[in-house]
Length: 124
Image 1 (cartoon, rainbow, N blue to C red):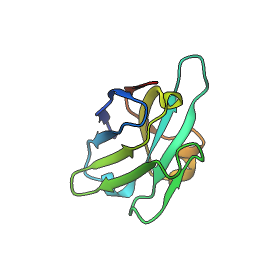
Image 2: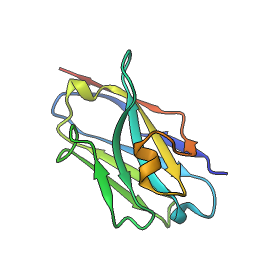
Image 3: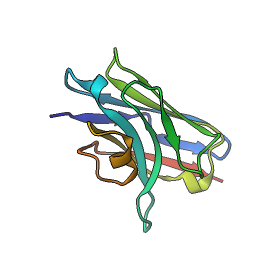
Image 4: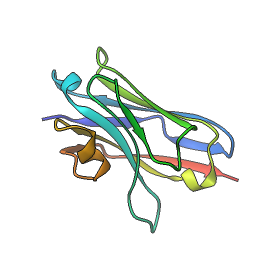
């Protein structure tokens, strides 16, 4: 079992930055692909970013490419999402996800483990 706890959400003006963290329980964190998915009110879930277990491969949605950076620290059992140049359309609840079978399951919203989510609000 893996438990995921997100932090770092909040309110920011457009053009600002936020950094999200996702702390994972368990000794096998380094074996899991990790990622972030968001959902805005009244909209479908949207894949944001994912990172392989080693950190060697990363994937981004086109909507955030060049503005967001995903990273991980396996020694701290934590994955991060640095969000720069935020836009009002980035407003959503951001969920951390983990899966042993790789980033594909995260990108397809089929990850085995999910956090409770953290709210990000970007005002214009």
